[in-house]
Each structure stands twice: as structure tokens, then as C-alpha cells.
Amino acid sequence: MYTKKKIFKIVSYVIICLSTLTFVTIPITNVESKIFKISDIEISEPFDVKFNKEKVINRGFSAAFKELTSSIINTKDRPKIKSTKLDEIKYLIESFEINNESFLEKKYIANFNVNFNKKRTLNFFEKKNIFPSLKKNKDFLTILIFIDNDKNQIFLYEKNPFYENWNSINEKYFLINYILIDEDLDNIKLINDNKEDIENYQFGEIIKKYDLDDYIISIIFKNKNKLRILSKFFFDKKLKIINHIYNDIDLSDQMKLNDLIFKTKVNLEDLWKSNNLINTSLKLPINLQLNSKDTLKIINLEREMDKIDLIYDYYVTSISNKNLNFKIIFNGSPKQFLSIMDERNIEIDIENETWKVK
Image (cartoon, rainbow, N blue to C red; front, side, top):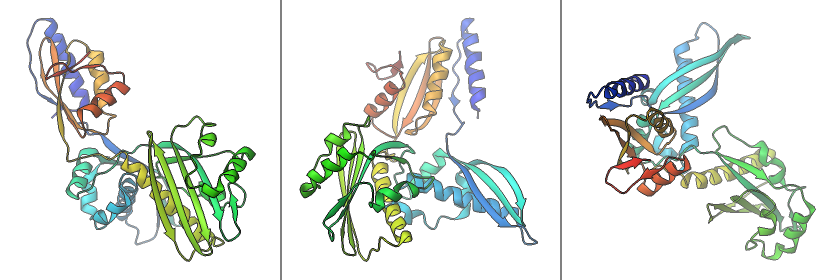
């Protein structure tokens, strides 16, 4: 087995040999596993005669696993991993480090960084019949409208409990960055002018003011102690709509309001994740060829492939005096692969069975 550094040394050595007309074919496996990195997990424990550092580390592992799964697993799939044992979690971990250890007021405090082996983790999810999502952050323009039907009033900014508290409810594992619209009087007028048909209003006059193509519109309807939240989720020119009803709601109760905002954000997170699912059951083999003497292009290709979560694995199958051949296992379609390569300015010739990097 070879580490990444060894691979580059081998490739360099082979290229040197080829310059002297020596023909070499070496199967090389890339074993530098890509990782899911979870950072800054803070764990504290009373520092007394019962203190056991191993137990503290295990708590760090469990907390990191919870944060990882919260960021890439849809809510409906959480019950499938609820009973995951510590030994199973440990098997998924590639490495970890402990930072900022301190002993304050008879308490041990430390921060953990935990790296989960990507391939093992994806295999684990596949066995549980779970498609995880790409861990992909995204900005969304966000419009929050509060309609109090009891008072026949509509609120966009002031006296809108969702707008006023939205950004205070957040979790490290949330992937959506909500860009709330500015407090603009013209926006208030537009909303009031269209309040009779607000569910069907397109909001184009507001959205066009901002340099964001994707947006979220949540309209909260209050009828006495019942709340209906209608959310429009627009991404990549496609619209999804979700509707949730909550009973016995008291918005004057800050804890209940916070919980309601949290639930709304989780629903939106699930929508975003559903756009970025990794189909781990689909393992498309791709043969990719490069000029074996173009060292910089080889290194750049490997560097870029390491960043692509949909690449399950890749390795070098052979090297000749002309070509270096990769086998890539891709969790997606050929069209997706080519699109991702194009985004990274890697041009590929697909005329033959073995594709070539130009």
C-alpha cells in the first residue's frame, strides 16, 4: 500500500525512467482517504477521582458523529442510526486531535477535531439504506412574512417574531446561510399591495434587488393559537413548496418560538440536502487517461479529485511511456462527472471508451 507522498515519488520516478526509454507498468492505489472533518467539539468533564480521559474522548467521538450525521443526513433517516454503537463510530474515524486542554475550577475542558474516513462512512450509510448529502454550504435570499389573521395585519420586519429572532437560532451543522432582506419601506408596500393573494405572489420585484438567484420565502399565518408555515424553496430554477401546521402555539413564549424557528430551519435544511444526495448505490466506473510526462496536470487532477465528494475512489491502473491511466469510481452519472470537471477547468475528450484529459 502506498501513501499519497509515495505515489508522487513513484510517479516522478517512473517519469524519470521513461525519459531513459524504460517501460514501466505499476498498479498504484490511492490510500490517502478523503475525510469528513468535524472541528471544535467541546467536551467538559468534572476533574475528580472518577475522571477517566478515555470516557471523555469517547464522548467527543459520539458528539462528532452526531454533528456529522446532523449535517448530511435527512431528518427522516435519523432513526436508522439512533442506536449506533461506540465501536461502530470508532471504526469510521480516520484520526482525531485534542486541542486547548485545560483544567479550570475542578473541570477538564478540551476541543476535539475528528476526521471520519469518507469511504467507510459512506459504506456505513449505504448498509443502513441512507443516501447522505454533500456537505455543501449555500447562501439563500430569505423573506419572512408574518400574517396575524386575528388582527388582520401583516408584518415584514418590526413585530414579526420570526424576522426578529431568525438569526439567533443556529447550529454548527446548518448548511444554509440565510440572507434576510433589508428593512426597505418599498418592500413593505409591495407586500401590503399583494396581501390578498400573498401565497401566489411571485416576489420578483423584491428578489431582483439582490444579487442572489436562489431564495426562500416563508409565510407564517397565525389564527389564534394555530400556526401554518408555508415555505417556498427556489434553487437552480426549480421551486419546492412545503406546508406545516402547528397547534397550541404561544408566540409570547420565547422557548416555544425558538423551537418553532429551529423546526422550520431543519425542514429547510432537509430540502437543501435533498438537492445534494450522494447515491452510494450507484458506482460508475470511469477510465481516465493523461499524458504520463505531464506531472503538473497529474498532480492537479488528483488534487481536484480529492475535493469531489461524489468520487468514491480513484487509483492509477497503469503507466506507460505515453500515458497514465486512472480508474475512477463515481457516485453519479457521466453527465454529472463531466459537469464537475468542467467547473474545475479540466477539459476531457470523451470520443473514445477511455476518456482523456486534454
